[in-house]
Length: 344
Ligand code: SAM
Image 1 (spheres, rainbow, N blue to C red):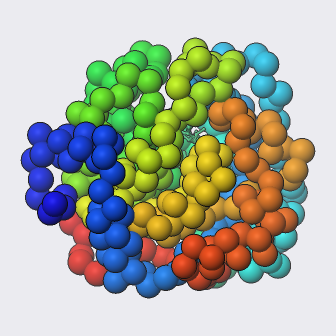
Image 2 (image 1 turned 90 degrees about the horizontal axis):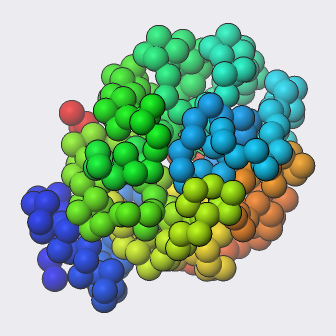
């Protein structure tokens, strides 16, 4: 089968997804690995992830830290705690810090700018990635000027009807997409992304995800399986399949050869070998957790989320060995996007 994903029409993409979900084609995975090696070699970039706050004003139906979940214990790291995480990460060799959190009103521009500026002053050669959801253009601009370089904002699903079924009316796909274009315009390296096998998802929705990625041309794409969290409206839904997630990763690698694609925590959470399988299907980034241990169990986006062992900085040697055993080399450098073809 020929995988010219860059050229395929919507029905062709839908068909290729359905075909591979039924009967995965090993050639697709091999092709994704070949393309990834042709751009990034065997390097797997490591980023240190800090889960800054699980307070969120939003109520996404799938997410364990949604505002309406009264069971989850809320926390917010102090500036000092965040800086301690960065120092630990820096000593361990990390050159990218990823700060992620819910849409926490306490973390306003002033506080975030202060944190980002301090990190940037202390570690001027390190990249700072943010993932704090939707904000007005002026806020994104301020955070960029303070020293942030990258922004992760998964679009979650590129189909409007599907978006409506995963989110309350207050949130809109139009705004989410607009934020992504704004971030790109400001100069961030931008990460979009989506969950695989989220409730109500069809192959058409996934085809639309690929078409949206083709249009946006993001620098990074986060793809992970949907995993239920029992205290959310989707608590009884089915966990996404590893094989489906792997196929979407591989198709994304074919579509965006230069993209930085994490083999996500969610993949590692549904299968002992999920992380390695992701790397072998075109992923080239891993983000071990360097949040304080007490915070990790509270950043519970979904049930059975792994946050120890090779998933975390304490298990770094283990992770480096896992990456090697999968056929790649852990790389602690900043790992910026390499444009081989100029972006639009
Ligand atoms: N608030 C920021 C945002 O909106 O982008 C960042 C935090 S948000 C919790 C990070 C990502 O977690 C989301 O983009 C979503 O794809 C993922 N996520 C949330 N709940 C999930 C679930 N039940 N299963 C898998 N992934 C989930």
